Length: 250
Image (tube, rainbow, N blue to C red; front, side, top):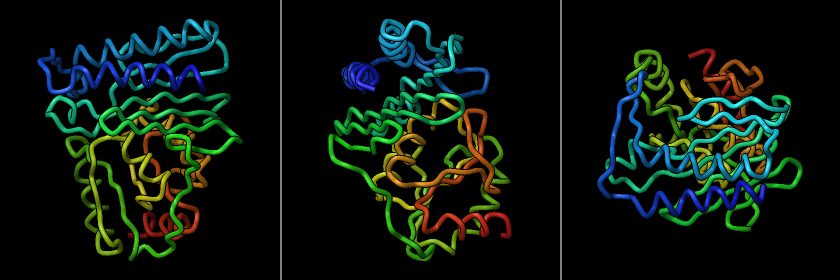
């Protein structure tokens, strides 16, 4: 994970240097936005990983998949692109490592606050070198819910569920960056995350960090989450069962 940490920080410094500067913006086929900064940040990370692990597989948001062995790196070079474009300092770099469908390592770096989250399977999760642990909240009425903020697709389903669940929680936040959602959850600043349309590069790093911090991640109906999943619920273990029951009944 040292290679991933160094690559994330190098890419993060590049992002920070170009934040709030003139950038080139394109619209992708799915109508989301991408910039030249996303692509250059991705090159920094891919080159670093390819140099150290030439036989590993890679799946990066902008350049796609490069097949290799059973170790798969998932790379989001600029998570929170829309925030970045609008000058909102809630963005970061996500680098996850998966082995045989298991989330075994993750690095999230948030350059605007110089926060580095990292985890390796069986070794714990850390923020700037200090151990992380999910919250001990066990009551939904006291819980902070982080909710999928992408309403342009599937908005009726998402808003329908949110409307039926909203009164069950203490408060709700939509942050527009998976790196921030997962890192807040892992360090106990939020208690629940519900997602509908996540891409694997969005959440692989965060999933590894969350699991090592004592959290739980599963599908909306309790199914196992892997890199092909899109819908999931993540939380501390005390609140997970009640949450899943709520999702399937409201």
